Length: 387
Image (cartoon, rainbow, N blue to C red; front, side, top):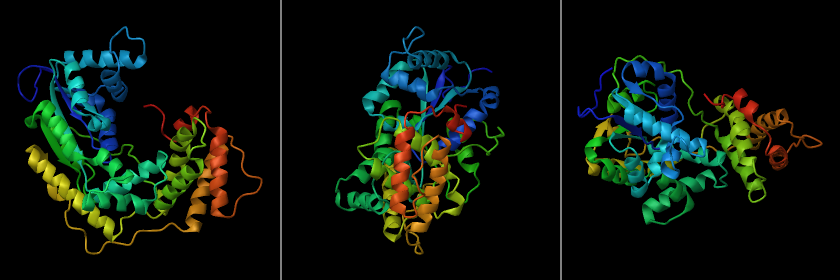
């Protein structure tokens, strides 16, 4: 297919979807990967091993004779992007939203001769706040949910710095992301896509993303792709409490066991557990954060695909109270986690704990025991193997 970049210059083109995190990135990445052949027929190339390649570009010495696989993949990635004569390459990696100006410049320098467009997806903070806390539970946090939401509010109201606010600014700091990328490529090459509100057509986000990247709207895609499943509140709290017990004493490999086995097993409970919810104060914090995002987008002067009203700035009048997991819910989640660890060969306690503290201690001991085992088969069984 002849070259047809946005500018018509004839230069090779790449679209960088930079996130932000928790804004439908997994859904879009899986759509791109699953429709790689169809997209190629429409002139869009979706490179493989994108995350590995970009790490090599940013932190390594990419080249065909590099000493590491990462850097060889990065060298191939750059060569293929620069030589592609279709309408453009499309890359989606949310960690690009963390780059500072010097890192963004390093990436653009490596892409010399390639026209770079940037797409940033943004989402209602009432949905990203619970999703981000859930991710921290998978990754070792000991921070309780109420403190997470209150911490963000304390920074918004009083400028008081704290761990929750720092984490949320890093992953959802749209103003900084726009400053970095409009400074790197110019505002005319940055597009913001809003994630539709809950209950919308699941393909509406894809259609907005396609418009932002220049992908043909008549390209048929199947929305039945893997997404990041949400954990219920009891399962999140179970992970957090396991992290408390393991803190400072966990052997190498413990985090991998939690991410590859325990958390995926707990995902199976999502339909039967109450979700992580914001209380009234949390809804106010989310609305205030949405106001910051909307102001940042407007001030940046970038094109918006979708509607900034997808980021409400008024909390709903009928916000529910936040759920507090009961001992029975926590014990049920612990039993699910226990079964998965038994499958890895972990040794259970002499008698099954009947109290929740005992159940958490048992799970922590089992995780310590199997830390470092080969998790390849476990990942495949849970749909986490390489695609």
